[in-house]
Image: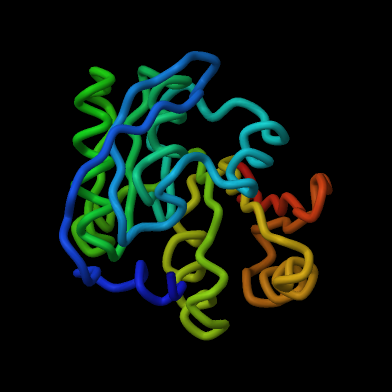
Length: 204
């Protein structure tokens, strides 16, 4: 599939749900997926690295998944932090539908997927986890990250998994230059062909 296909609001082709069985938060989950979305057949390698490498999310407050797909990150955040409110955003309306349906299937009333503009602009995030959509292009990616990273709450952290050969190191440098002095940008780990970048907002 052309990578641009799942970055549209209305993917081509029929929206046909199909069963998906995956491991999330240490247990087997039976969910739904479809064509026209990112990694429809399971948890992709980058997201698996993110799960393995980052510390647990904030147990309360607001958490964010940027580019939710069928929901693996948002659902994991919801399972790990049942007292937090998890926001999942995507431009692909099929992804939003699937993430909300999968959250309902798991009984996760604390997970809500929506279009980006539907998130309350006053909300600040204690934890952001993302496998950001690098292939949308540099300008679009930069715009996306500068929309959400400045909304970290004081003391909050964003954890991004980025493939080395897709520009993880240059992205880290760019973030360090673009964000103001209240943010710290660091490479936290390297696993296989991926790097974990952490963006931390200073505490008040």
